[in-house]
Image (cartoon, rainbow, N blue to C red; front, side, top):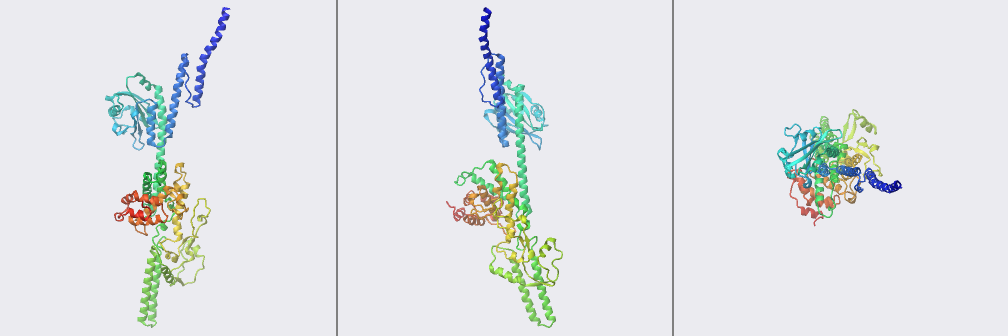
Length: 638
């Protein structure tokens, strides 16, 4: 009976004891499941009366904290997208998570092979000045480079050291800032994906005499620091690669811009000067408190997009023939055809002498023939001088001058050689449109012939419903090289066909930039770069956008492009304007709704035009500018 009673009593006691033992084990299972699910917010279990279970619970809590800290620093470092900020974050996170007093980073320079200090963080005091603490660059073979820095930098294992102020050498200032005469040091190498060392991470622990500090130097803690340093090294390498890619892209962009400028000696520097004005105007807008600009707060990504767009705003010019861009006279193609016209006049003058001598030989009155000869020679000289002046182009060609051209063109000269011999296959095809004339043939002095018309290929025709939204009037022919057609140009030196070719560079710019796989933060590059020929009233090109349809940076580009073009001194068809002349012209554009009036006002008030002039214009171009008068004439006076 006694045995039975004891057994009956043991049943509830055993059940209670099993509950005591099982409950913490179930809590440990639940905590392990939470960790497996990366849920580090679950509360920790209480203490267990069983020593081994209690130790296991403490170990689980430490493991959870370690994993949470590791994932937190991994996420934190991976989210940083700027190299300098990444280094600060690496130091701050590793110092904090390892409970160190401070730390610093050395990175290996890929070019020089030297260890360069790139960050110093001293606990609660935050980031510190590198030079002020005596941290300088070292070659790996420097005699004064300590082994705890040399060994990890050379691919060796992590190093542990304890030293005082007397042994600190060049790092004494760091100890002073830590307010500790003695420190424990852990240095570990930063290795990239290929296992190459990219730098050294150094953590510092104050020596306060408390034995618990030495726990931070145990092998398991060092392994944790090495794991963190591995993540930091990968993030640093990724940022370095990204930075190098940006540098490569920027160098490639400037290479393209330089090639465009070098292609034409008359526009050299345009692609390099326009970004200067654009970015200066953007900085002025970002710093302005005026209502139109107070919401303009560009991020680093916005600045990058504007920089790229400004440098590539004319990249489509690589497709534009330079002899069209540089066309300085009306008859110029690959050469100036005025020489052909001059030779025809020379032929007519020789004919005048031939007719004179023929008449004299036939017994005609010599004084009368001499007078006719001299009158004809004088008329030919004067007519050629008129054609030569017309060939230079200008702001306006009067209707009577165009009529005079027609009269001069009616003169004829005699051609005795076949004009279809020795020409290219393409030109022969064009000349075949008309039957050959029997020789000798009387030719007009100036003419628009069928072979002067070059057809536009089908691939270059643009439909009204094109997918890009371009709204350009496309001339029927690609070129019209008719002599009268060119000499009759009312303004400048370009025909409608040639002006379209030049204007088409912006179409090519947009198409080229849209083909590039820009990341999302650079998606507006094509819009910014492609809008600098649009006008606020919607009469510009290539899409006839209005002011409301254009971004603020695109409107900035329009002002920068116009101001640079007006003041440039390297154009063959005009001289560079003075500041007052250029701004006066832009006042008219402002009143005519060609440029943004608010941006033009900022351009004047901020002094961007003056800063640019002092850097890039010739001294004789920098004249006095009455800013108040300019703003008043533009309707912008306050």
